[in-house]
Image 1 (cartoon, one colour):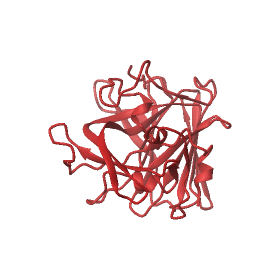
Image 2 (tube, one colour; image 1 turned 30 degrees about the vertical axis):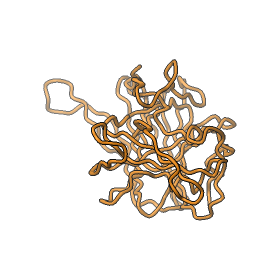
Image 3 (cartoon, rainbow, N blue to C red; image 1 turned 45 degrees about the vertical axis):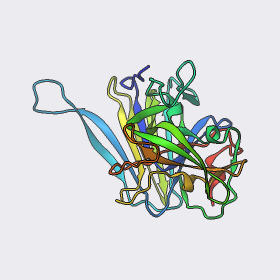
Image 4 (tube, rainbow, N blue to C red; image 1 turned 90 degrees about the vertical axis):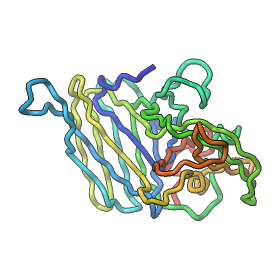
Length: 284
């Protein structure tokens, strides 16, 4: 099934280092954006407009707000679909039937995002690590969550490591979602950002067939960017089994263990089925 994005009022797209949780008490999706020294956070709101001076209708997206160089601590994003929202609280898109990371054909299935609990075959707990980075917080209310972009060019291998860091096993894992999508369909979407003593908001009124875009990226653009963000995630979440996992990129044409270089990749992780009920619990 392909997600029909054109009916949205606004589309949120998140790419990069972050942990997503679904707060059942407050009925919202939450993302802890990890603010280490390598990943750069950027936020852009784009408005769809018809381009002047052309014979046929041509839609272009123009930036109406952009945020970069934000402080490491104290940044809060709130995105809320208000007025006749199609979704109340949150919904997660999962295709019917079993999901297989090696051959499932629905590219929008939310399960393409790495599930921490699936790696550990059970409940995930809060990490005991004290070596954490600050987080920026994002709260999304009344959104429909799915995988927006699946990177089919990269195949990942899963490496299991013991508490001493030694490799215990490795196996083919499959493809991983590169970008999370959230569809908000309502009369309007309200975006609010707070950082330091500043607070700014934008009200995005519905344009039929022309959704706004809210692009959020937290990426490492350096030439020596790592393929696996898992060591960072284990600073916040951990399995009860004291086992850690990392990922390496392999290609279909190479033997297991071969590497692929030249492509940046930072992947969001789902921290659900844990003892953490809100990203607020992940703060330092």
